[in-house]
Length: 109
Image 1 (cartoon, rainbow, N blue to C red):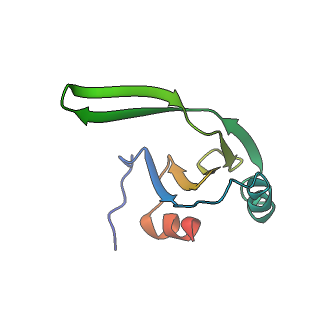
Image 2 (spheres, helix red, strand yellow):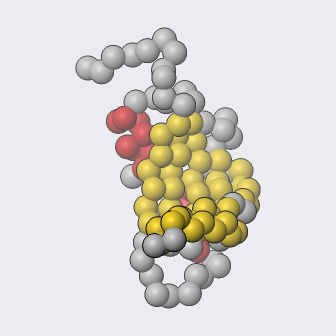
């Protein structure tokens, strides 16, 4: 049996799947996934982020900042977990309070 903390130290746990695809992004995919998860994750939000790219060269480290592809986020009503979807990306986030690995694993599956 695992130890139970009064104040669990984990703020966020996530499971991220990145896919390699040569296909174009089908914009209907988030809607299809939402139809399957909407009873548990009813709140939707679109996010635009930034990608920070660092590359080592003979002259040193070059860096570039560019917009990342938009993500669709589906939140649980209580905001304790979310699913994020973007081109070639699926992320499942468990926020505070972290229940346990077995419960997070069920959420992922």
